[in-house]
Image (cartoon, rainbow, N blue to C red; front, top):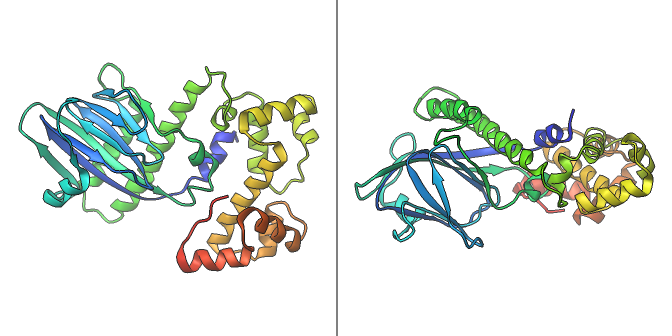
Length: 316
């Protein structure tokens, strides 16, 4: 199993909201920053995207997919000089009809956009979600939605207009697929880049192997020498490249990944602390508890109690 597959398995999308928006010129919608991720697919027509912190507006055409993993504030509009209304105000005056269908604008040229947001469990703890940029743009092909995206959107469209039992669960699963597809497409472009970064490490021929081993086998008593040997590198060369790409030393990353896994297991509530300690590579509950408290700021039992009572998340 590759490093990306293993890390994607840890991404738990637990709620989604979709709205098929039919806009007619002139129109503009401003979306405030949020904890959830946002995404937009231009089904038909064109528009402009303006993202907070980015100076250059981005033209979007039919077939384009935009994912904003960090929930950064942004604006969609037909023209750069068209006024924009706050999304909250728009929904208050024109609530989504039936199965989340919104119509807004002045009756001119039409643009259809599938808009959505998604919530993730433990997003601050997940290295993938923490490493994604504010904006991922997947361009369509000659104004058409790329094939891999089109099939997923067709399934989502069917579920959003149906009243069948389990439709909400199906939409969540399909949205997870859409998110994974977007991340995969984004990572393909990173292969051609030379700068460092955790995401770049996922597609590095040697570091991706090391990450996959760490992700799949957190219980192993890894050393830098062991990992270097697995990827046919010297200890010093491996340690230097790992730190350059990932941003921290191998053993530090191993500890963080073990704690991320431990948090997930603690929140599930099915295993004892001793069993969790063994799952993530600690010989004793005492050693695990000390490492957990040093990394998270509270004991495993305290974290479990807090997460059950409040559903809270603590960043590593």
